[in-house]
Length: 169
Image (cartoon, rainbow, N blue to C red):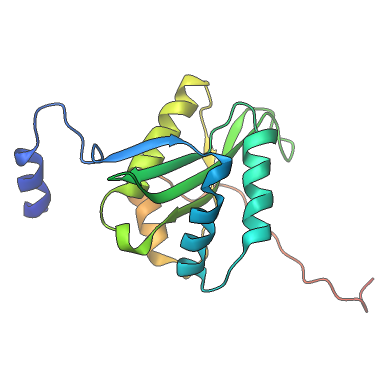
């Protein structure tokens, strides 16, 4: 057992969660600037147009809206974008896709991602969505570890890829 985690659990008030310092709310159109700034810190380049389209899709085409923002001390700390599908790739049951999870590098290790995921899962449960899928880059070991600790496991499907080559067409 992790002694630090056990000590932190003992210091908390009964019923308090380790994510209580993080406020989670629905993502809004006016979050775009903060999302772009955070994405630039994480990715290393600005992707305003891409994030603008993703945000618009998440807020207008995914009903009900399941995309979330997190704040710590009223400061934008992270976001999660998801979509609901009611049948995809021949699978008839509803599924949620966790498309993007980002946390401001200055806010990491403050349970921001955990708070976003906890609220996302609570919302999905209320909608009777029983499965969440996401994709993680093979080299994103911290993110893989986060999802593993949250209970994610490899899907029983194989994702296939083909490089498009004009000579093959």
